[in-house]
Image 1 (cartoon, rainbow, N blue to C red):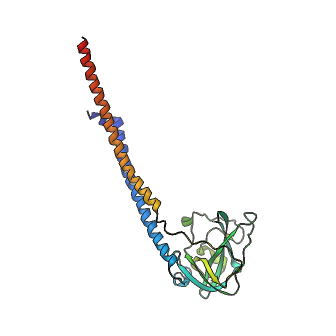
Image 2 (image 1 turned 180 degrees about the horizontal axis):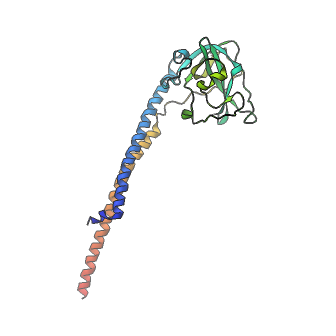
Image 3 (image 1 turned 135 degrees about the vertical axis):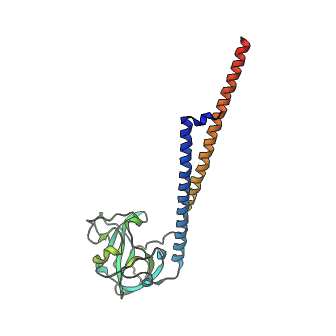
Length: 264
């Protein structure tokens, strides 16, 4: 009765099921791994966002890099803004509008740190300069969120040449040292507040949302593993249905043969 399981059609189905199950196991494990890494990152970010601020030079250095573990750590800095080397970062969205980040070097005794003073809406055309409030003159003391340098891998933004003067696509201190003209500390700082306060200033960049924890990845992981049960259950159901159909055919064949003898 079970010999049909060795027919080419059924052998092909067995192979498909045997390939699908480990694939679903792998995809589930991958999603669970993503969930664990994202949860750890969210916990770290939440801790850094709520930690008391520290001097920025204790977490980064000139020519160095900001470790991922210090991302969003609140820092303080004191210096003077270098408005002559201010840059505009293209394609930045805020309030559902595309505009620019205003990136101004802050000169300190040990070097300059890039400060994202906030967001401004785009100008009349894509290449025209928007209205940018000037930074305060003289010495300022600020608090901000420390960020690692941006890369294509972390942002999905591809650098290209031929941009209008003073405009960039990526906030990458490693490529901006020659443009700014000062030794740069690694990473950059999203401005939260500063003294003295500017009456007219770019719109602050909102704090990142923390606490999602990769919940979607957990749901996807459970979903892939549920598919394993669906695959096995469907396979068994098809086998049982085939058995049922064959038994009915056999029984009907026996009944037809008995009726034929009776008529004869």
